[in-house]
Amino acid sequence: MPASASTPKLPRLRLSAGALYRLGVASRGVAAIVGGYVLAALVTMLLSLTLPMARPEAVMAATLLSFSIYTCAVLWVFAAGSALRAWLGLLIPGAVLAAILQWMDVLSWSLA
Image (cartoon, rainbow, N blue to C red):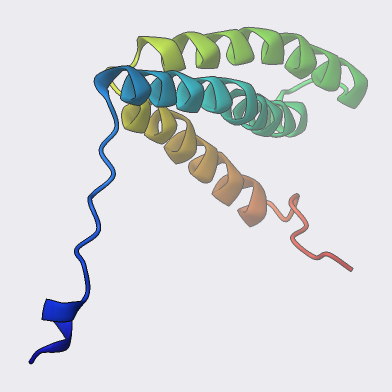
């Protein structure tokens, strides 16, 4: 007698349409709060280093622009067609910005 015949089959967990919708909204909320903040911070770092003005003015201008960038990121997250597209719309530009900052030797990945 095979071992699988003696073990009972467990039912698959299926989420209702309402639960899936709520999980999608929660995922978008996390993407908007966390992903939008990280994207705005990366853009602020890059702009504060590359704007052609004195460092204090560049930092102030980049910081002021970060509020608009964060707002646009939040709008993007909730306007995207799916939660996956919302996450990718934040992760891909964030990865590109992080790569540029790493190439400029600005980011420090050391935990020591």
